[in-house]
Amino acid sequence: MIDLRHTALDSDESYRIVGGTDEILTPALVIYPEIVEANIAATLHLLDGDPNRWRPHVKTAKLASVMRRLVDRDIRQFKCATALELVTACAARAEDVLLAYPVVGAQARRVREIAGEFPETRISVLVENAEQVQAWAGSRIGLFIDVNPGMNRTGIGQERAEAILDLARAIVEAGLAFRGVHYYDGHTTGLEPAEREAAAHRGYDRLIELVAALARAGLDVPEAITAGTPALPYSLSYAAFRSAPFVHRVSPGTVVYSDCTSLMQLPQGYGYRPAAVVVTTVVSRPTVERITCDAGHKAVSADMGVPTCAVLGRPDLRPLGPSEEHLPLELPEGALAPTIGATLYLVPRHVCPTVNNFDYALLVNGGRITGVERVTARGHEGPLLARTGAASKPLEHE
Image 1 (cartoon, rainbow, N blue to C red):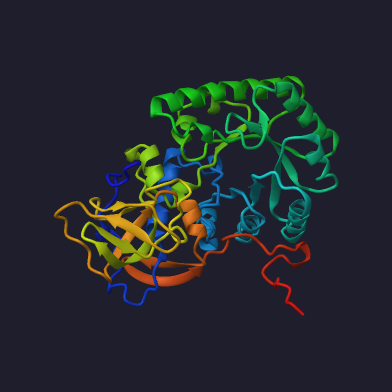
Image 2 (cartoon, rainbow, N blue to C red):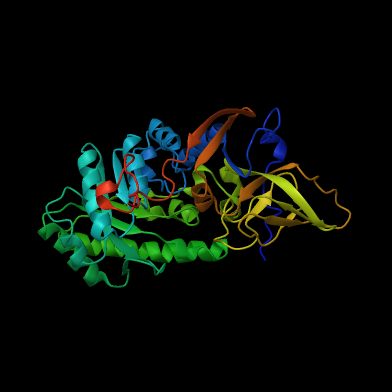
């Protein structure tokens, strides 16, 4: 079991809601806009103040107001994974959005609809074969080639240079916009930092060679996208990206809110802090050495395993395996146990799906609740193409 208890976290005092939490129905998602702002600023600092170098993945942000904050800081290009995230990003005034997912069938038709609804936004998708290219014929949708560096979930293997060249030619011959290459190197996550950097840089060497091969074939690459959160330091340290003949953008999204995993993966000097926590209530003490709170895996995502979170201000409490509505916490011998009814603040191990668990978020500034906002891009749109969008309603039984 990974131990998150000693992740570099603030004490709970800096997150505590003034006046208590008596009126909060727990578990509740709490977003701290001031910390979001600081995390955005920290990322821009790493990018030498250039917002054009960042294409954040907004699967983490989810809230329209957070996407607008990014736009207000001149970050105008986003990446997303669902049609609902795409709609939310377009409505937040993004100028350029990549739906970084191989959409097909009804989902592809929905993307065409969204492009018609937001003609001022440049929209792109990923492709990995000629059949997918033909699905976009006659549209204004741009196409990025999905290059697989070893993640092995989608894309063309980076060693298949000729297949990538053929696909780029097919895009151009179809009269569509070849936007560049998408290279998500998330497969390096489990390596130690030095190994991760070496593996990332070996991949980037091959990526540079691939771009050069495309250029020799008369196929210019306008943009190359690398690095989610785990590989961010190594995209930043790869010198060849600074002088490359294409726009290079990194795409970390988790950093906007941060979580236990990103705090462990990234240098502490980057200055990130958790901006999204789950407020939970202690509901039981079934044994002397255990308490239980109401933040099971329907609240704090368990997709990355146990522990699912860390407890702010209480590194001595060890989260155990959750069930749907219950999260047991182990107490060390002799530790002072939180009383039943006490409030705890949990930092998720994986914040992205945790945010997706909630319909609403509490906004807290200066320790005070300043608003409640719908988690705009949570989940997916309605399942029928003709009934998608905010006005869609489910079919009723007759």
